[in-house]
Every structure is written in C-alpha cells, then in structure tokens.
Length: 199
Image 1: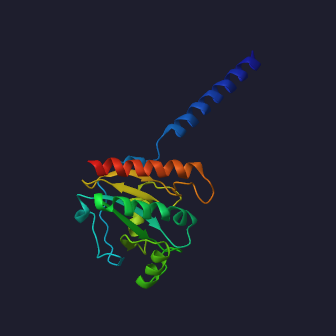
Image 2: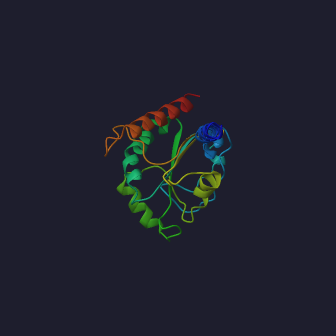
Image 3: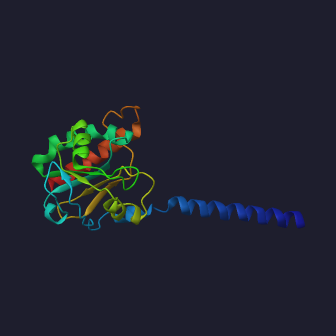
C-alpha cells in the first residue's frame, strides 16, 4: 500500500512538472506583445547619409530599423539583404534606418568612423548612432528582449510595429553558413515589407 502510494505521488509529480514546463514553453516571449503597438520615438542627433530623422516624421513610410556594428558576423551576413531592400523598395516608400551601436557599450565613436564602417558595408540609407544604446534599450531590452543586439523592427505607415526579427541574420542564401533559418527569415522579412508597402 505504501509502495503504491509513493508511486502515485511520483507519477503525479511527473505530470505536474510536465504540465508546468509545457506552459512555460507555450508562453510567448514578452517582446512579441510589442506587435501592433506604437513605435517608440528616438532622440538621436548624430547621423550618417541623412539629416536627423524621427519616428513621427517617417509616418507614411514603411520603416525597417536594424541595429548593427562593424564586428558583428550577423550584421555582415545581413548587410546584402538591407542593401537589396533599399535598392528595390526605397522608391515604393521603404526607409531603412541602420542603428549603429558600438561595443563595448558606451564606447565613444566619431561620425567619421561610423561613415567608414557603413561605406564598407555599402550602406546608402540613413545611419543613426545609438552610442549609449538608449534606443536599443527602449525598443528591445526594456521590453523583454533577448540576448542578441542585432535586432530588426518593421514599422508600418501608421507608425505601428508590425514585425520583429529578434537578432541573428536574414540572408537569401543563408550565407556564409548555408543556414536554412537565415533563408527562412529573409523571406519572412521580405514578405512583410512587400505586404506593408502595398497598403
């Protein structure tokens, strides 16, 4: 009787643990709740390839915001996609904002330095310098964002967040590692841009 009772308790504990872990796995990441919300304003006064821009004045455009830096392999792999999207969709109303965020955090960088880095990647779209990561924190880490800093947000013509890529890369060929997830994410980003640009 005692053995049967202990076995029953053990089975019950297994079921409870299984249910709890499934509930935890089923819970969406906190940052996914940002989809459909108003994009936060930023206040950045140092820019490359553009005068300072604000979220408010970009209303009416579809905006792809991507954080990057020169030493990031994910940023290097994503650069061709950003250049492609800029060339293909700028005339249709897409504005890409490259948010340069130096590492280590808070490292002082000159506008000339960031210009060199952006030219090396072929970036012709606006680049903002998020030196203290203030905008990255407001958009990402303060909202339950995960470890990557190479995140992307797509904002619609009304100024609402419609898509978030939580970091890593998106690349049509999955290069340089032939990564199928990167190819999949590239097509997701492209499809969302095309959908929002058609509206």
